[in-house]
Image (cartoon, rainbow, N blue to C red; front, side, top):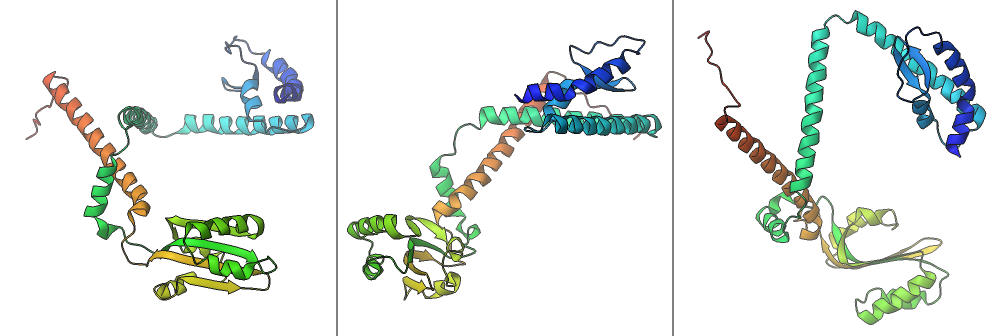
Amino acid sequence: MRCCRQERALLQLLLVAALLLAACQKPVNHGGKTPLVEVEGEFLYKEDVTKVIPYGLSSADSVAFARDYMRKWAEDMIFFKKAERNVSDKGRIARMVEEYKRTLILNDYEQRLLQEQMSSALPEADLLAYYNGNKEFFMLEEPVIKGIFLKIPLTAPDLKEMKVHYKDNSAKARELLEKYAFRNAVIYEYFYDQWMPVSELEGKLIVNLAELSKNFESNRNIEASDDEYCYLLHVEDYILKGEVKPYDLARYEIMDLLSNTRKVDFMHDVKTDLYNQSLEMDKIKYYEDKTK
C-alpha cells in the first residue's frame, strides 16, 4: 500500500521531470531507474526518493515531502559541484578519500576475521581466575543486597500476617508470599538468588536505603508506610560500598575485558604472521636511506 501511495504521490513530479530530461542531448543509461532531478550529470531517482518518504503520509503530504527532498538534494548537489570546482588542494582531498577507503576496508576485514575466530565463549575458569587474581580492581560503588521486597496497599487483607512471613526465608514462607503478592501486592521482587544494587530499589522504597545499609548488620528487616502503601524489605545478605564486588556482578566486566584483550592479541598475531610471511616471499622491500 505504501508503494502505491508513493507512486501516486510522485506521478505529477515524474511527468514534469520527464519533460525536462527529454531535452538532454546525450542519452544516459539510468539502469532501469526513473530520474527525477539532474544536476550537472548527477541524478536523483524516483526509487531513491520513494524509499525515504515516511510511512503513513497522505498523497498530498507525500508529494510535499518529495518536493522538499528533491529541492534539498538539488541545493546540496549544486553546492557540492561548486565546491568541487573551487577546492584548492584536490590532491589532499584525494589522499583523505584514499585513507578513509583504506580504513573502511581494514575495519571490515578485521571484523570478519574476529567474527570467524572469536565465536567461542571464554572458559568460565579463565573468568574466575582473572577475578580471583584482580579483586582489587572490582570494588563496589554502592551497596548490593539479596532479599525480598513488597509494596502492598494498606487496605490489603492479612497485612499483619505478611509482616511476619516476609522475614522468613523458608520455602513455605516464600510460597505464601508469592500467592499473597499475586493477589494483593503492587510490587513483589524476589532476589535471594542475585545481587541487586540498592539504587534499583531507591525509587520504589520511601526510605534512604543507602543510608540504612550502614545498619544492615543489626537490622535486616525494613518496614515503612505512607498514606496508601506498606513497604516491606528483607535483606538476606549484603555487601557494602567499597568492598569487593561479588563475582556474578563482576563477571560481565571481566568478560568484556578479556574479550577485548583476546581480540587485540589475535589481530597482533595475524598481522605479525602476515608480515613475516611477506618478508620471506620478498613482498616487502626496505630501501636504504641514501641521504645518510
